Structure formats: structure tokens, C-alpha cells
Length: 170
Image 1: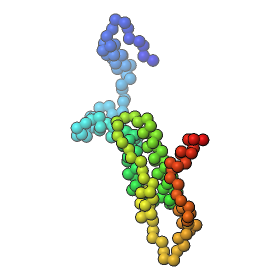
Image 2: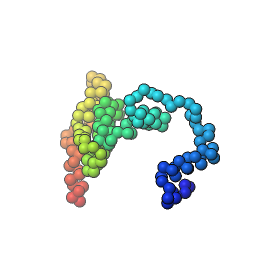
Image 3: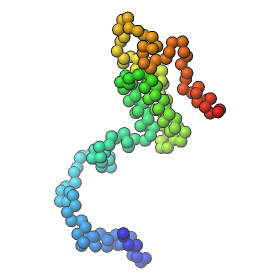
């Protein structure tokens, strides 16, 4: 542990003294990259270059560094692009509900820049999902029991907020 700065000594001289003592002990010998030039990437902002290098070394996507609202917007865009890969309408509804829940939680206590994040429209995602599904063969059974994740015939679809009102009153 480092000792405390003596009362009559300035910070710069105290730090210089600690560095010189560490050099005498050999604490800076055999460091990785010793004697090699600092890589110059030719980028204007060295801070961004350092961050890009750190993300690459750690194997982390750059999305981690984004503020929450921008990350949520990007997730909404990604869901719209990949919704056709989900196996059923129930999975689409679950993915939209989970994303909308996180958006609503961020809206309750926004941290960071004031960026509006729009809720994902479940009906729009279901329409995109249906467009990406293979066409049904002629004569195939299209009843409610024949398709996974569809609403049963004659049953009205409940909106997600209708259950929330009754749950809060109880």
C-alpha cells in the first residue's frame, strides 16, 4: 500500500519521488511492449481509438458503449429485421412484450440524454412475421388448431394493457 503524502511536500514532487523509487526497484523493467513504438492508427480521436481497441481485445460489441435509449432503439430495429426467424406468433408476442417492458422501465427513470424511444407495435411485428413465413400449401388445414401460436377462432384478442388494469386494482 502506498504511504501518505508528507505534510510539507507538494503532490508533484511526492509523485516524482515515488516514480524514481519504483524505477530503482526495477518495477518498470520487462513490461509488455517495452521498446516498441506506440501504434499510430492515424485516427483523429485517440480516445475513440483506445475504446475501439479495448472493445476488440475484450470481444465486446460496440453496442455496450451506447446510452440505454440508443441501445433500445437498436434492439427494436434488430427485432424488426429478425422477427421472421422466430418460430411462432407467441414467441413474437413474447419478444415484443419483453422489449416494451424494458423500454417502459427506462421511461420511468430515464438516465442519460433525453432521447424518446418508441414502443414496438406488436401488430406490426406479427405482420412482418407473417410475411416471412412460407406460404401454406393449397388445401392445408388453416384452422386455429392447425397453426401454432394463432388465436382460436371466435376469440377476441386481448390487448396487453387490459390485464394490467385489473392487476393494479387487485
